[in-house]
Amino acid sequence: MKGPEFIEFTYLYRDSGNYKNFGSVYMFNSKRKSLEKLEKEMHSCLIDRDFFYDKDIGVPPLFFEDSTPDDVTWHEFIELLEASPEEKPDIDIENVLTIIKEKY
Image 1 (tube, rainbow, N blue to C red):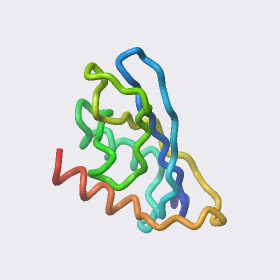
Image 2 (cartoon, one colour):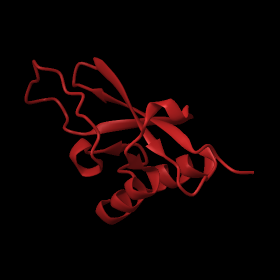
Image 3 (cartoon, rainbow, N blue to C red):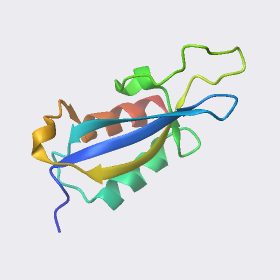
């Protein structure tokens, strides 16, 4: 069974006080992999299975303006969702997977 052509990559930033900012980016799924397969691949490559640096994969940062020296500099992957073609993604999930496999 083919996966969705368009997906929503959801993630968050959690500061040292456990305050959270949530975000998402729409992506192509050029190889039409299932969401489950993509999530498994994603978790196998990320730092401690969940974390990444926003600059590494080209997603907008979700940091708070009033950061402290105790705050971390990474973001946390949440999940992938099916998205509609109206979202006009400009990133391919395969490119993201390639980057995180090389960096982490």
